[in-house]
Length: 97
Length: 521
Image 1 (cartoon, chains in turn brown, purple):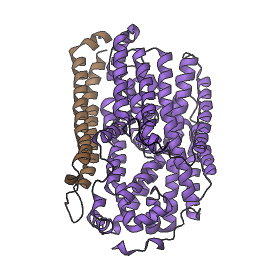
Image 2: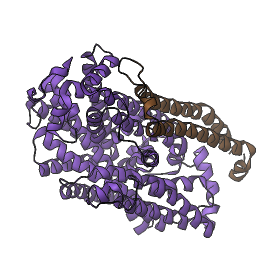
Image 3: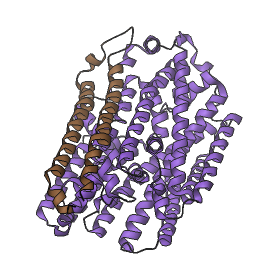
Image 4: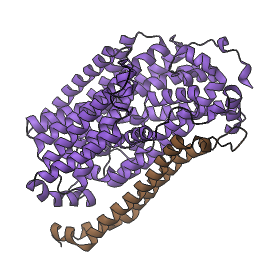
């Protein structure tokens, strides 16, 4: 049995919290690059998005769809990590209390 | 292809209540009221009224979150924007999704683990209750009121356009039906209404997309070629919507972080049993909403070719009737009736969710926590929650009638700006920063709320477009980049200047609960 305070001070707990935020921040940065990159492309380089990739289809169309799809994939990565690795670490730490 | 079709040839039954529309509408109301009757018997405690007894599954909550988020404005508005402006509408569509991953990475789990019924529970977790609850309720209620006004005005206008019902009648019907859901069925009924609405909306738009694509040999490429043939290649290229990078990023910030401060969305996280289901529900919601925003532009492009911009504009200058019109051309009056009824259900559900969020801020945050210092019996709390619901429902109808005919499109943007400036910074700082103080939270919330409102009033959106002044006093159309930053800076600065020993002392408890879920309700 461990006191809550000892658990909070333990290297395992601190490491887990650190890892959780590291993953959150890396994924948030990916999201920022993805979305604001796209928006800035729209604002600053319209001809690039107007490039034709088919008879009439422009590059902007698949890129817009890709922003949505990749956003979902980033979410999925976090949820997968949270529901497997993070939750099992949490369970181990909680058992020490 | 269809380019030769004469624009004036279209006969539409829009604006006349057809048998099909009334039938679908009555069916939806009957089913949802039936559910409300069933839910009412399961709504006795505050936990049931506000949080559906925390018994909603991840999949159900994913649908309900989508239901709360996908409004009639995004269904009809984005289809219309794409039909009238082409690619620019698609840029707008992407912005509506990107808040969801941010919500997941930054606050979903802490929110679930720390809170009980409202996001103010999290902000006030270790800070002094009275000032923080009042400030959070100001931010929360302001957001909800702005969003509600936009929805109610939209509701009256759309129902008038689709069913030919007088505006005031539409307001009263929406108000009465949604009040029945919330008042008697609380969160259980509201959740099921959202689920039904989300399924109907996703189903309706999917069918519409398939019907549009069937006209073009199921090839989006052919559809785009037809668009280019009729409206030049420019319809498939970014146009005038996004020009100033700072303005574009500011709007993007409001859309992304505004979601993290929308009370009616945040409150859904208390309806699931634990953090694991909270995570899964975000993944489902992001999937449904992402799918929705990917296929909506196809409907919009299809409408511009099959119906034509002139005809769409002739019925509603804003282009909002693009989706219903293309539904009528491809599926006839019955399908139009179905789509109209789905749009109606969409409005009802969103307003119900907002009313529940507004009522919970009034009753749980103000009455129970501030007036009664947390000392109220279950019975009393449920009673106050129901009274607040009625108050809020009446306010919603009155706001809808008061703003009749006004341009309220900016109010959705403003709601997101207030949410990301007033609610989100305090929420995030209270979760992650040990030295965040009561004064820091209060000043951060008030700065964010008042600055975002002030800046939008003197921005081109209101100062020039609505108040017809020649030049705006503040250059950006959306103030988020300034007001959200200011809220963070003020929260930090005031916290550094003040000391809140009890709050620091409670940070350990909070951490245990935030990261491990120990003691989570």
